[in-house]
Length: 79
Image (cartoon, rainbow, N blue to C red; front, side):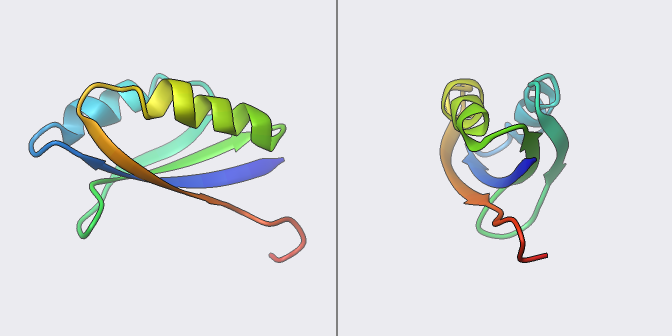
């Protein structure tokens, strides 16, 4: 199982709309609004990193009003 955390910056005032859209994306396990340099935190889980990459590139980064993302993919065996 591959787990990734995605930090998202979005246009001001669109975080709730984007969170609602992200909740519909397959492999999304958790999504929350956050305070700080980023607006949204997403936890993804999938069978492999390639599926997560496609989800991030084609389903999250392409959402309207998403300005940037930072992805952190966990390393197995370092729990």
